[in-house]
Image (tube, rainbow, N blue to C red):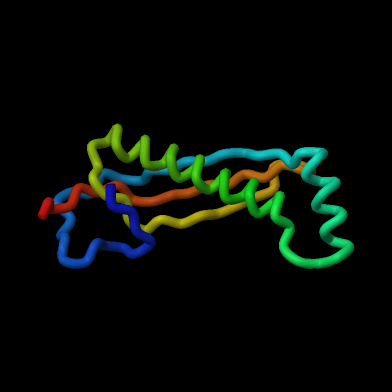
Length: 106
């Protein structure tokens, strides 16, 4: 499966547009991670615990989007965009959307 933030795949024309696909996940902070993150804010630098949490969230949301694209019969997803929003205190949603298409095979 080819995925891209671009609107098309260069040199591979789209045969058919299948439509919007999406994947999301809602993650809550973990008390242990919050304690470590709080300590890191005292000394500065990257908050590794939250970086890891967001990376895992992106991967899970992307996997869900690609599963939906495969169910439609797509072999590519273009125009991928990520968004986040706060659902409640301590919990956030990560959403990825894209357009499922069928492109010419090599």
